[in-house]
Image (tube, rainbow, N blue to C red; front, top):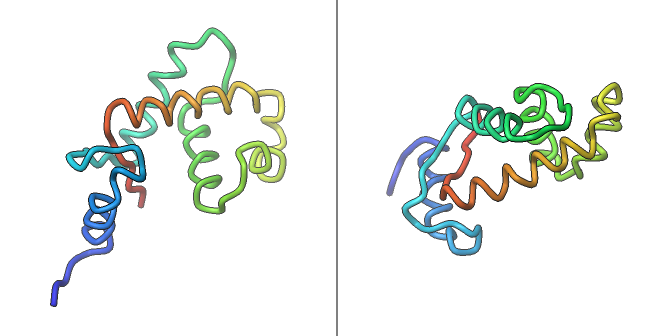
Length: 109
């Protein structure tokens, strides 16, 4: 019998299924702060106005955890950001691509 934390079990499961998640088995695990910093870096590369990185990460996390599309999350939970939904979606598309390119997985608490 093996015991461990939820995070340890998640990493083992993800490593086992890495190829199905577009990751190599030697992926790195990053947390919320690193994920937000990555989004901030991607925002810095854009000319369009977008909300702060922490807000975009919050929208993304809510979308992933509820299985709702980003547009639905923005409309239902953050309607004051409707003006930025296309830019948010574009940043998150680049965020997903960059996570694959860097071979990282985000384990959020």
